[in-house]
Image (cartoon, rainbow, N blue to C red; front, top):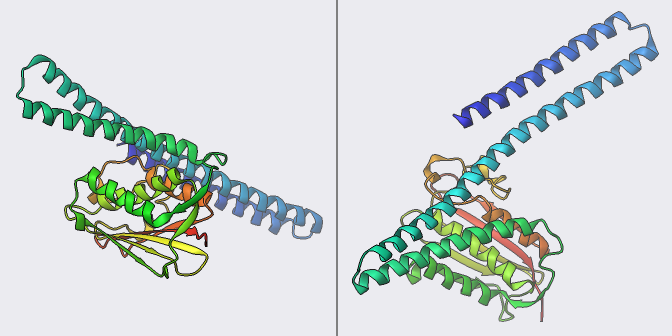
Length: 302
């Protein structure tokens, strides 16, 4: 219902803007026809007319943008609320069970494992929100040092395997074009670890039941290190590709509605890449045909 009402509001403002522009055109053309002999008045009338049209277009665009932004903000609030409430409710339920009943040791250990998993999920959500808040701070993360990016990527892959309980071959690693010189970059290790982990987590979450993610690290020239993470999952519609790195944005297709998230992961990745003088982009051939996210960073030569 909320989405429908917002769609109607967007349509209303678009139609209103078109009607106002048409009215302004009609009035101005009529005025020009009636006063075509008055050269000075005609000149200023045309200028005034163009200013009115520009103002109407800017105003309508701003209103539509704000409506869409509010919609994304509400979706973010709902997602974060769910991501916070669900693990808290689970932890509370298991604690109450442990408090009221005498359980066998194997069952107690299973409850502890579930609660630890929920705690990690809760902590991950909080960290995502904090990272998103820091992403706009240009002063944050200025402490940089030389980092072995290949080892950092492999560490992130091991962590992803453990966190998502994956088999070793679910994440495949390949490096090429290094010529034995390594993949050294200069940056903040914690920020880069966050960026790589977010890309890996997204690839795993959107892979569906069968996780098969290819991670490729390359140095195509002496200036760049390129990390590509390719999944074979749900894919991204072409119209969504240019928006997925925006804050709060989530792909709208129904097939990914069950995938939980805050819409901040790729926004954080882009912010970290930009702080390190790099860039990030995504490619997909469409729904059901997988996605490739690529991070480019400046290479530090020995």
